[in-house]
Image 1: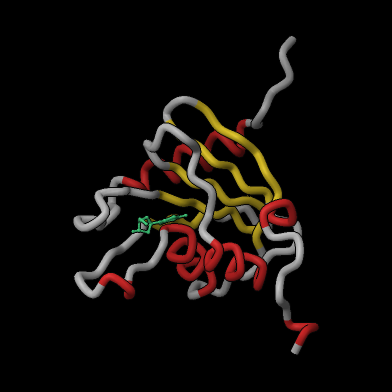
Image 2: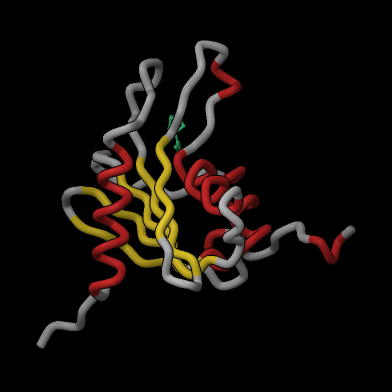
Length: 135
Ligand code: THU
């Protein structure tokens, strides 16, 4: 039997990220992104990218999902899924990697598009984060 690349929980998380993408407000880039983060307690929070006509005020889907969770008192994360319809899977930007590292040590990150998905670890994407211990 072929090895399962992602398990059922992860499939569900990708579904939630895909669903969140539907709320993307991205009239300037037309690049819609959805994200969903699963907390260690099993709750799922969604986010989409939200753009501004003052372009620099735009916020990525990943940070919206994480801030949504933190604002509900959830700061401990197990996995994050990112869904776009780009041909190449979309990795989180550098700013989001840094924000994720604030809350997550060993976060699993699933990049997904309609063609498939790839499972990574935050430590692979951001091997030497600036963190609280550096203060
Ligand atoms: N974007 C995200 O939401 N997440 C990423 O990981 C990469 C970029 C958004 C920001 C902006 O609204 C659009 O994609 C194009 O950069």
